[in-house]
Image (cartoon, rainbow, N blue to C red; front, side, top):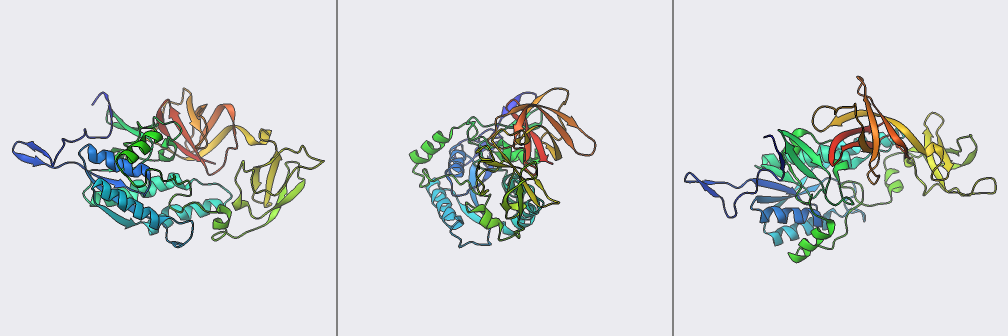
Amino acid sequence: MTNEQALPHPNPPPEGEGAIVKGNLQPRPCVVVGMSGGVDSAVTALLLKQQGYEVIGLFMKNWEDDDDDEYCSSRQDLIDAVSVADTIGIPIEAVNFAKEYKDRVFGYFLREYEAGRTPNPDILCNSEIKFKAFLDHAIRLGADFIATGHYAEVREVDGTYQLLKAKDASKDQSYFLHRLSQHQLSKAMFPLGQLLKSQVRDIARDHGLSNHAKRDSTGICFIGERPFREFLNRYLPTKPGDMVTHEGKVVGEHMGLSFYTIGQRQGLGIGGSRETSGEPWFVASKNMQLNQLIVVQGHDHPLLLSPQLDTLDMHWISGSPPDTSRDYAAKTRYRQQDASCNITLAENELSHFTFSSPQWAVTPGQSVVVYDGNICLGGGIIS
């Protein structure tokens, strides 16, 4: 095809049980929806059912270490998912991917923290669990497509699938989906891409979905919302050391470099004094060899501002890098505004980004994600 085709794809099937084609009953395309118990995935399933697809709900359980923990909501989430599936009138099953999650996501998560970097487990969770383990399982169930409640869009242009930003800029989740492949996007549907969050809640309420007002989850992917330092301490040992200024002056003690991230302000346990400016302290960098946490005062301290960065493991959604003779936009963290940048590609899989204005608290282990207007091109791990 030579024109841009907005998805869901293929075109919504006819209403009813199927379409009669040359005397035969044509089955409706089957979509397996990842249902988390939240309102977004519930409305995703509802919309696809209304469009005439055969819809099956799938609830993923991916964490078992402390299932009775007060911060793990999987039991209630399953109850909510079953309740809305019953209201919508679709079947739902539960599947356990705890082993895959621990092997593919959580192990990497711990290794990165132990090395002093700050990983983003949600990105790996999408590429390895939601759009790999889940996709494989859905295809075994006979699915033609999978759908999730992500705020993003997919579009096909001349046989290439593009990942687009969502209409609701405040909820856009293309940043977390930037490592998806052409195959994964060809099977993915994001029905919420053209909706505002407020509209999603209105749809859920108007159709009697019991979770229409349920609070959004903001915790670690599939692990939940919990005191992070306490959680990490279950798996990584503490190794106290000095907090020092960039001049080398000791101003406090840290509990272990793994437990801090660049740009962190809270939880440092140091304040202003007569000898200092009185401004808040921020983590600027880590010296792994000396086990030192370097801290600075002031949000706009020069050591917190980076005009350039290098990346490893670049992933381009189209399968090949873009034309680097022109500038693009990129963000080095989810809630950041797009920033103009130039990209230099190297043969050793390193890429170099130069920004038109310095970026705040660029963090090794996090991802820089590249955009061409509304199109997400891909991204890499900040090294």
